[in-house]
Amino acid sequence: MRQTWTWHFDLSPERLWPVLADTNRFNEAMGLPPYALEETPQPNGTVLRRGRGKAAGFTLEWEEKPYEWIHGRHFRQFRLFSKGPFRSFGPVFDLEPEGEGSKVTYALEWEPLTFVGRLFGKKLAKQAGEAIGKRILTAVDFIKAAPAPWPRPSRSTSALTATASARRSPTM
Image (tube, rainbow, N blue to C red):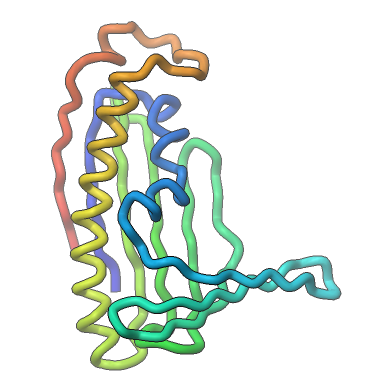
């Protein structure tokens, strides 16, 4: 299953990425429950990452797969569950240039293990999407209000500081 949200901004991907790709900041700002993550080095040089936590009364245990990460453009997190209502769950984030601005796409993908997982996944996705939407808009306001600590792209200052045209279009 997949739930997708899309926004359009008049800020460049270079300005948006450092703030929008900070997953720890977003998780904290959304008030996600704390969880424990155990990292175990493997003989082949990889690291097995296993997580445990609780959400909405469910005890969850999962293996956290390596992030897909393309700096400035994309990330995907994938959790493979051994306990809880899901087989898998994870966000996908894409940032692409669009004219003088950017297109931001955030999606949640999940595979329910049970009927309860199907219902809970839809509810969780709806709540998470609303929270992410608010956080993205807050982050964009922050970016516009703060001087950029990173080099500005070669676009005009007026294009970078114009009011965001945040059109939200959820799709399923």
